[in-house]
Length: 213
Image (tube, rainbow, N blue to C red; front, top):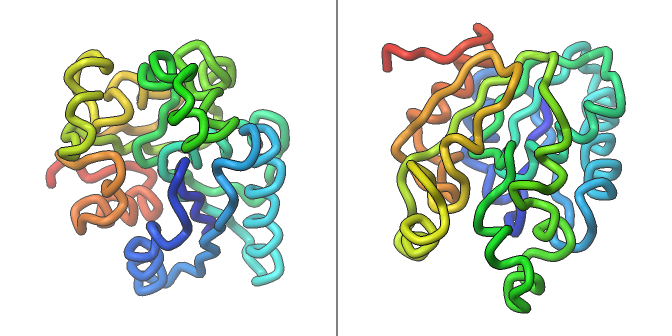
């Protein structure tokens, strides 16, 4: 099991999910990478193979992925260019699969460019995510519909429709995905609530979410 965090986050942000996955019997590899230091293509070439190699050393015959935010874009980029024989199921949390309007509006802002780095410049609605195309492997997408206090200006002024403060619900959708779920949580904390963790586990086990919850 490989976990990939999002832009401007660290592997530590995924720890509650790691603990739950390990308790459920999964062996996890929580990959940290310098998300603001390089373009998406370079990050993808470094972070994903690092996780895959670690799983192979542990004897994994099937490798699942759980990603947050830009971590999902890194994985999509890698799998668009490489086949992975052991590939299992993928759960993406709040992925900007069609980019973010925030990146469109703020890409020339010096503070935004400094804080988000080269990868952040590629996350616009006409950027790299939009060019990756549909997926042909089992993907479940969970995205949020509630913005954190500090993201409410973005939510009300820059992002159309329901969103999690960073990514719109529509942007999270992905052509070819197996299942889709909207939950009342914000972008930066969607990986932590127990109901989300239960849904991640359900998809990994059954290939679908539990829509009865």
